[in-house]
Length: 464
Picture 1 (cartoon, rainbow, N blue to C red):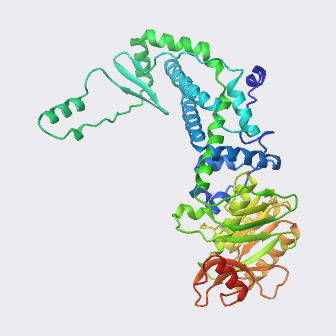
Picture 2: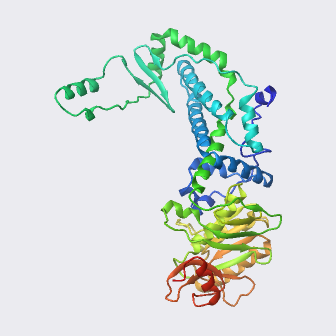
């Protein structure tokens, strides 16, 4: 990484080899799949842009590096986050003394991040480029003025908070009271070590700078000399590192694999799990198989309420989104076509003006059909379930057929399927003979009494 590239802000990315495209996953997708219960908003925002298919394998390699050295990556991620937070506060400084003071704190945080980045373990191409950027072509580490105290006042930056504790060399009133309490025989636990943080007004900072002119003159000189050595684009690493470390920590809780990419449209997974159930501390997540191919690209999913239909649909959607984004799938094995996008239609609790719920459902369905390009995955959860039986039956059949003709893949949970319609295969919740739930999904309508169903359930220890 040469000096000219650094000056032009052409920093290597840990997510993109050729830059970020403009296409994004639909905004409601992560909520429908309940990924927002597992991942932070910062991680979700990092995953919204749909990466180029060519970046999936490089991301898989970076994830493998992160997973193998998670502690070191988490340390770098935390340092990057502290640097990012302070950069935001630095950019919002309200006066020159505050700006210069925050810059000194910012520079130290950046140096800590730089030290960890230079030795970040991993051998993937994107990680090597990342290390190279922080190892060469940058200014050598320099001394930062001692900005921690300003005269008789403690005046410091902690994370993104600036605080003052006046007269630090003297005991505060609370400390003097604690001394008195201990002399009277009260437990030492009455003493509090908590520092009260006060966001100082601009005038307070300016007054401190006047009372400590020598220190603030050093800070001003330091800012003037080194402010141009910081690259604002470096703050992006806080989000990129965080995404990898959050997912690596999450996947330590479940079996997973990095999916094999396919040039042919398909999604095949063995023992696939819905990781959104981890947010509920589920003791056991029942796995299911999935197989979508060019021969069977669209399925209806029917069966008893509470039998695992929505869980199965979410497992498919999460696998498609995370696998498409270059991350693992919670399955024993998986082969995945990089779908152009993933669309979901889940029931909404909304007020409907004019058109009513049915009209609103039609509008949302039409948006999905317009946006899909024949290479997407469409997941429908009881669409048209709130309208009349006859209309629902008709609209369900028409919608499923339209998805089939489009070339996109689809899974449609419904109670309204026309049983005489034969073009689209059916997946069914498997029940035991007493109608209790197994949370297994199989092709066709089956109960435990069927020999095929019994063999499948025995495999997972559910045939008791």
